[in-house]
Length: 439
Length: 101
Image (cartoon, rainbow over all chains, first blue to last red):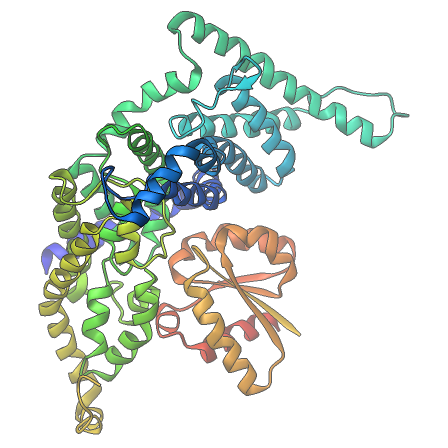
């Protein structure tokens, strides 16, 4: 157990305090909370996409499928409208949501800064042409730009306020009018800094700022699709959870721009009928790796529900339904898994094994790439299918992984159960005699 | 009437605890309102409540949230991991009530 002690020591002394700082940091929190604002719209957008691209073969003879396909072919633009106005312009939601969340952290007016951020983003990402705003840079490839724009607008406004840089009106001017002039300065600064920069970059590199920023982030985004990066993110998430910190909130908070970029590039390819490029998406993380929540604990919950230990059995049964909806705090804290040396190995490594298998399953084409953002509380079998555009193989993969997870947890569970039974003592154990184990 | 706010990352698991606490309060005849939310909603919500309890998984935000709560004269505390995991409505209700008085 020397290695375990060493790992716990590193986690408690170094990783946990750092993660706490990162997780509580204003910009990280604003980013995470801002994405949560955008999420329902993105989910609606992903959801409606399936109506435009039903999972049937083009040459199907099934009359229902045929009718659907024909209807879609005739009404494509109308069917895609809900998608275009949500997922297709998700950066607008992100730019406003992140600015709102950050301004709240600074106790500034949320609606003003959101509007400021929106203006800045549109200014650099949506040059008007022939009477319309182009949405080419609003569908996921401009996520990093939207986040940067939100940070910039709030921080700039905050600095102007701090140094009291504003248009001063004579005393007699009513306060409401004074306030409207107050906002004029940040709007001007926003315009005067971003617009010339945008024109310069268009001139020099013949691209818009979002495209230029995306170029900068390409290495990060493509690195995220590799197995070592996925395992690294997972390891951090699991070690944090093991020490009692909501690892997923922190890691996913940092990963969310990558998840959204990856899924939107996938959707773009899907819509255009091209090969879909990105493996690492939110449904991959939620439904293949974390079946039943962080740690893939649904397998453990199933074992616990049939345990001979009263404590484990009651936690297990209480956690079955929440576990199916990917919620597992009762298992993590009640068992407890947190700082439990016996459960350390399966808790940390089961999700990693799931990730490796799922990675190759996607890589070889056995299951499809993620093309939909789904609520993370969707039961894993459903969510996996939904995430890949309602195909069947993901269901199979989740079931296989779940069965495998049961066997991975089993020996450690048995060890822990034995310990629990000894603690519960012969008196309690005797009281359960006669009660069927599988009840 | 006492108003208790529970916060965790997404307000999901605290909503389970919220139900257990409401049951405990009802059986003891205590008049209180308990609400579970995502910790992101904390700053806007805390004014409306008498006390806030955090799920142990977001305990790392205790210091910064306590600062905010203190400006309204409210208190924030973290729920003990075991009480949380076993969804002990009674014990957590006691903890909340003790912080209000």
